[in-house]
Length: 175
Length: 146
Image 1 (cartoon, chains in turn cyan, brown):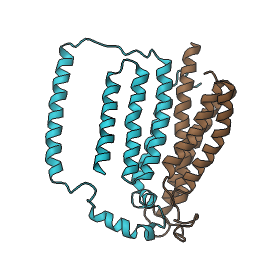
Image 2 (cartoon, each protein chain N blue to C red):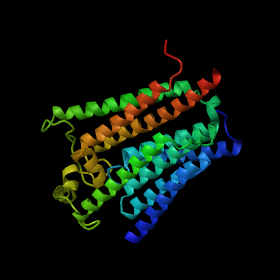
Image 3 (tube, rainbow over the protein chains, first blue to last red):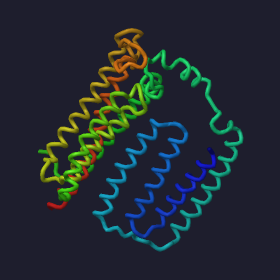
Image 4 (spheres, helix red, strand yellow):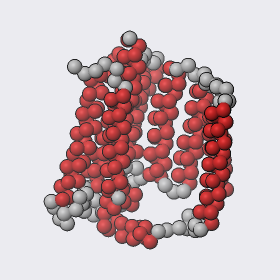
């Protein structure tokens, strides 16, 4: 199980690296799609169909919008020269990556084996969730009952995003 | 924005209805099968986006559609909040309390207020995605007019 996940994650990393180095912006967007659809397979493999449905639909619609945007723009990537400022940026980035790898290594040592970790709270959710919420789908039961505030916040984020897009992208003011 | 060829238009006409019904199924059965408000809402929005992409902006009056979708979005999230505030007055008096009768597990009409929340947020998500998409298209057209 972990071998398949590793292979898919490797493909996702290759796709992301290719998206950075592609000359054509359209192929960069398509390569970015590898990351999203690879994540769909990962979710399905880890038995999370709810997340997989959301991920595949969101990925498709964002890809459509990105392709429409790229087809309408110049498609060529503008390349700048490496000056003093970008050298400092690269060094800072490398140092940050080093720190991240070090602390991830430290953190993974104290975790349980992959897939065998269950919090004390989640046992109650799994055993009594169906009786307490009345929903046969445990994920929806948790989303709308135990974790209702989170879901309300998520819906509010989408609402605010639409408000922001509407107010930023308006060329003609209202009378 | 131009429309596409007649073949694409016909296929989009045939498919979008099926996609729309599938989205409604995902939203309404959110408390029984995988899926729910967010997945179903985006599928619902996808049916409309398919139609808009295939037919272009001459057939559908986009400005009017945008006003309608933003009003729908605001109304559905307002109704969600009102339904959630209702929990403050009934039963154990907690915000977001599931105060409707639970019913039998596995039935279509069960789980109290969860299906209603699902339907309302599904409408909200669909309307939000359509609003963002229409805002992008209208922005492009207004820029071309200049």
